[in-house]
Length: 272
Image 1 (tube, rainbow, N blue to C red):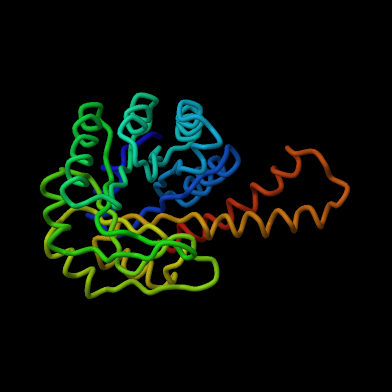
Image 2 (image 1 turned 180 degrees about the vertical axis):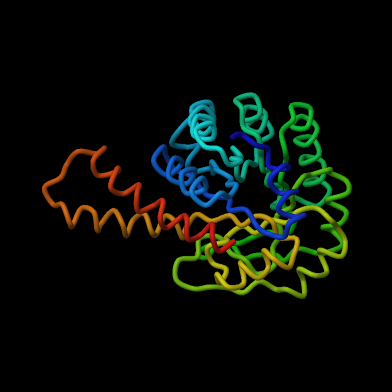
């Protein structure tokens, strides 16, 4: 069942839970994530990030994701993640995405507001939701983070009209070995200035207990999770190949692998 980002996150905000924004790389993981969501009776957000879009064109991704969403009875959001290009956002909206994330986190506050507002204007006209980012979420082996300023967050939310706001409160992209606790005092200050759903990028690096706790007690309504599932994919693929060293058929290999991805994803969704 196809849903917009605003629809699923407003329900999460009202009923105190969080929705997983799962980073997709291809057909098999998209389908596995939707099947896991169906089994858990939970909404899910299928996300096409920059790496995915470099490999597969936006119209193809939209068609694949919409097909997957229509095959299950739970709400599924088809979401463009981390776009820094207005025309790319426009293309995703026209192709059938139901959520777009414009990433202006490297811009000045004024430019971030201006560009994000333009994306909101064209997205809302088409019934599509928008996620923006204020502050900067860094990378485990790259750029350092810049924490979200609560006053800027309030202004950003008010002036852009976004449906969800990604914030930087200790979270880091692409963490593979360590965990970083979110700054709950900073989170409380941000929450005091706005009532829109909040988003945590780099959710794989947040301790699972804190993810669950804040899903129940805060305005964090979406955790982006990619690295955690990619690590599981690689581990399970090596195991499937080790158990069947003579197997060469791609579909047979991925069929075995998909069942394992579903189980891993179900555990992740249940925890939120």
